[in-house]
Image (cartoon, helix red, strand yellow):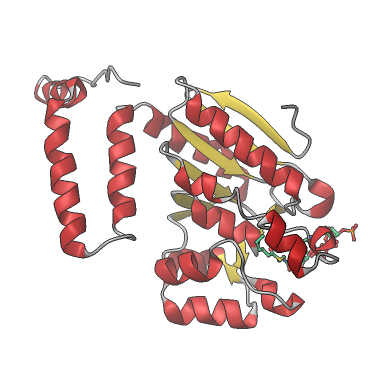
Length: 258
Ligand code: HXC
């Protein structure tokens, strides 16, 4: 598939997807989201890739769904197409870790796409928001659900009901982003972090991601039980032997399953 709205590259075990519709601040039309989904599937299937980064430009991660494309649709259209978000969940279903590197605007579907990633690194100019209310709509790609789980009811409700944007500092304070990086360094830093993850034992990063995600899907006692079972299972892995041997031998581990 030749891409028109995204750029892809790989670097040291990292698959990088750059949203690239600069004239529309990376607003998502159907083509862009089909391309993101296709690229995610390809990186997921590529054994040389251990982690992905999704990013945009310094001005915009993405300004949301393409309002011009959406405007004339009617109820039957959106129902028939399972409009635009049907394939988005694929991003949240990846087994390999995905980092969102967000600079500039992450609005509406842009904020929702970032929320589907495993964590968000923010440029210091990042602005997050769910402004759908001001165009007579509401979040349609998990915004009301993921935002409420990640930052709590009060802030999520305020953002969804008023469309207020949140800057990077507020986003870090409330746990929406893992940390803030000067915008000029964001891309390089995200790739560096992703390379670090890609160099760990892949089966163990997969299990770690799955375990953290359990926290959002089950009770505490079931989640803790799941984690313990997974923890026990890694003692069957060569990479656990290597990791712990390397520590005692005061050397760097060389994981086999990368
Ligand atoms: C289509 C968009 C767009 C969008 C920006 N553009 N956002 N086109 N859909 N979501 C286009 C503008 O029309 C303009 O094109 C160009 O990008 C630059 O935008 P400006 O508005 O001129 O830039 P600026 O003044 O810097 O303002 C930036 C902005 C503003 C604050 C981000 O563009 C804005 O408010 N955009 C809409 C944000 C939004 O409401 N997002 C939620 C969408 S609904 P031209 O051709 O005029 O130069 C949504 C629902 C998701 O996401 C549900 C699941 C899919």
